[in-house]
Length: 478
Image (cartoon, rainbow, N blue to C red; front, side, top):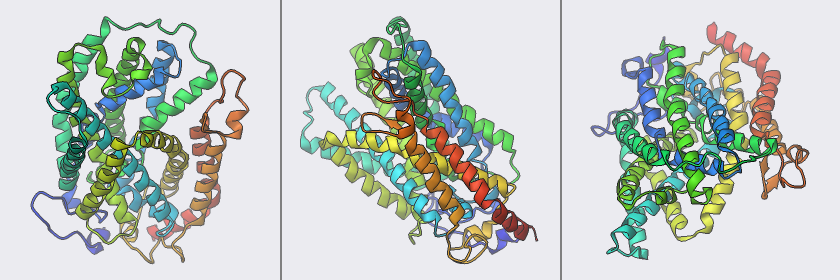
């Protein structure tokens, strides 16, 4: 196609450091295959954070079987991650550059900003967890006292180490995560063996109500596939344009579903005998002999570095999609400085963790309708984009006069309102729809926010945009 010839490409840079940002990836550089995505997601998600998610879920008051069913069902949302990885090979660029198609070149910046905040929030959490794990190791040594100086040194050191892999970029991330898959798997096997004889499957006899069940399901969907949909195309864009869609979705789904399910089940099993109050990176290891703490914490630190690399890489290209005239590696450095500073605050101010948890609860309010709009737009366009017009910052097919596609903005706002109406983040906030299902004993009600956000966002966009998108598709074909 003429697009590959007309679209400017990135200049060559330092050896080993990826220079490509949101610019178009020409066919000659599409080196990846679907199985690369399988190993990348497997390597990233074989992560101790998912043990914690399983333990936290058990703390809702479920029986082991109730928690198991939620884990198996909720993680099916990784299908959405697979579907939001199919636009990159067609468009040859990142998620929030492709997002200019449904929202407009200017309108997309608002959603890109939401995504940047989300990625930085998770990066901050990750660096803070790394530092806390390192402090636990220092305390284990006994000789090193976890002083203020040591905390600052660990924060700075974690930030510098975290910078390396995202700086070198896409190919290095994929290959490194594939290598890390095996030690992560080994830790899981050892952890599972140590857990088997201690599990108390009947620790909770009565279980939780259906309202709480819906809250748990919303939590797992948020922590799994739906929470990653903003990242998918940042990594699939190096696949060739004619790659099998079925193979891509299947690779992404299996590579993420299998480790998430296994680790969440293991986390739930551990919580049956250590209690959900110990649902933390260091707390999970307290149930075992002291010898296991060393390898557990060391591998846990590496694992969190790995999963943080995905967030940091995506936040860098999202900054570019926001319109900042900086190179991808410069964006990565900027984000690293920001998240390291926030992580320092998190380590020294215990209240930050509560604020961060409340922030994460509301992330799904924007992600659910956005995911629906993004996918509906892709289907309305018959899975085709003008790669050349996606790279333009003014004019072109997706500018639409003022750079804002109001049907998408309207659908996004409508979807977010619908999600808030059905959100249950008790005791902080209970939406009116959720409140209708509340009982005297439950406090909050059932959480339908994900479903209302997805459905309302999708329907509104389809109703408001289908005619206009059809005309744009005809213009693309002519």
